[in-house]
Each structure stands twice: as structure tokens, then as C-alpha cells.
Image 1 (spheres, rainbow, N blue to C red):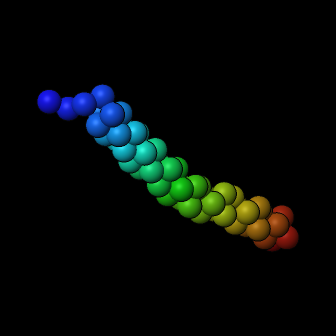
Image 2: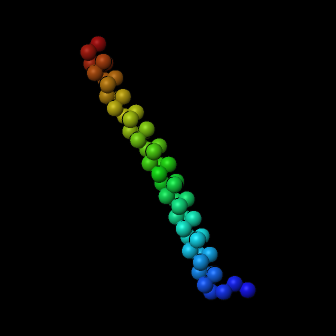
Image 3: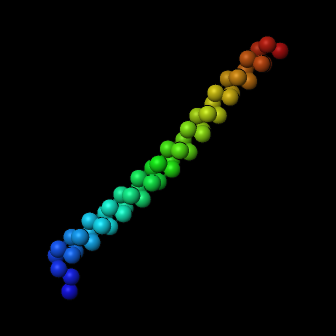
Length: 53
């Protein structure tokens, strides 16, 4: 049978792993996000060409 101390240790370990995975996914999402706004400045550079033509 598992003692209370062992149960608490396992629970903390699981929570730590979950928070590590969540943090890793958050970091991956933040790395993807700057790629999207980088496409936005490309659009305004096209519009001056249309106005000058």
C-alpha cells in the first residue's frame, strides 16, 4: 500500500510534469505567433506600389 507521503510525492511529480508540458506548449505557441504579425507589415509595403502606379 502507498503511504500518504508517497502519494503526495507522486502527485507533486505529476503536477510538475503537467506544468512543464503546458509551459513548453506556451513557448512553442509564442514562437509561432511572431511569424504571423511579420506577414502584416508586408501588406502595407504592397499598397504604396499600387498608389504610385
